[in-house]
Image 1 (cartoon, rainbow, N blue to C red):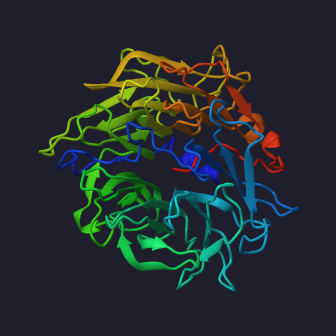
Image 2 (image 1 turned 120 degrees about the vertical axis):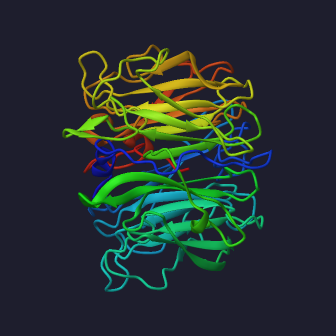
Amino acid sequence: MNRRTRTALATVVAAALTGGLLALAGPGAVAADAVAVAHADFNGDGVGDIATPSASTVAGHHTAGQVVIVYGVRGTGLTATKRTVIGQDTPGVPGTVESGDRFGWSTAHADFDGDGYDDLAVSSDAEDVGDVENAGMVTLLWGSAAGLSGKGAVTLENPSPTRFARWGHQLAAGDFDGDGRQDLVVADDSSTMVVLRGGITRSGTSGDRRPVPTPLTSGYPWSLTAGDVDGDHRTDLLVNGFVPEADEPFYGLPRNFLLPGSPTGPDASAARELRPGRYSAVGDIDRDGLADVVSGMPADEWTDGEHMPYATQGGQVWITYGTADGTGRVQAVGQGTPGVPGTAEDGDRFGSSVDLGDIDGDGYLDLAVGAPGEDVGTLKDSGSVVVLRGGPAGLTTTGARTFHQDTAGVPGTAEAYDWFGTDVKLDDVNGDGRADLTAGSGENDGNGSITYLPSDGGALTGTGSRSLSPTALGVPTADEPAIGERFTD
């Protein structure tokens, strides 16, 4: 299943909920998206960097894959000149360029070796290992003052590769056991994940590795999101995926589970079910010291005549707010919510991507929501991004704004099937302490692009904005590289 198929699948499914409210305990939660606007920093300059996979054809090898890293520049933001493109043809990177390896399929960043620079775990989930077809492989790229490169890159071995396992199909990084060192969760096409604990050395070894069963009962996680939700200074893991139903034994309906961190890593035995979503974000929106969970549900309420629980026309996002006694309120926001720009229509895919960051510097996290299926005028699936402000009462629709490629100041021109907003990031990439918007799209028949809109200190602005195309980034455009379809969390 290719990336586009995975994304399209998100538009036709929704999830059932058997749990309800999210239990949170203790003040001072350390969230994945903190008020200070946490970000990846591969070169240690204090400015956020962006990484995105590319389904590139490399040296004639179809979908061999690459990863594009765009470094934030203080005062300037993202430019095409300060970037690195890494694939299995890069000196030092293990493996051989082969068609269909999909290097970059999933990525996760953290300072795994504790040297002060963020590193990048990269999967090539369709890699053959010896004679084992599509066993999958995970490669670790090391950060440095010069950024990421292939120097010293190592393979994180799967001790028991199996055919079509696609080891590394999903990745997530964080301090899941609370020992002060960064761990890595690796999922494949099964219902059991692996956590590599205790940091990772330059030789590719970790303190230990433990299996982590998912509550999905069968099938692989659809997406993984890491963040300290319960405030115990251990990273927790959100697992989105399918639980088979009697009439849908293969896919079923998607579900969303929270696995709290523990001294041994994510604890599946204590999993709690939340409102469903394709992708999630974690952060303290209302600044009460407790993290909140945002999950995007881009499905329509009715699909092929079947009712989809917890979905609504055009899609929506669910926000579960944290409280000390575990009775957090749940908020739903879609384009049918008063104050949200646009009109809820079938296929808008509102909630296909979500991210949190403080755009205006008021100390409260704001939310960016991608709606890549939004029509702009008569242009079908041109796409848009909606930004909602955070405050002491949580997210508000007051002052909500929408951005698309016909919005004044936004680079490019709205066209049918651009899918603007395929993914979104709210990270500080120009060093001013405010979150800037990075949005991906499927520009030019799937080639993709990255659009950068900076914060002016109070709101997002077109001044200083720019669009980065695959060609400008040094990525070949044969076979739809899909730049910007998914950013590293």
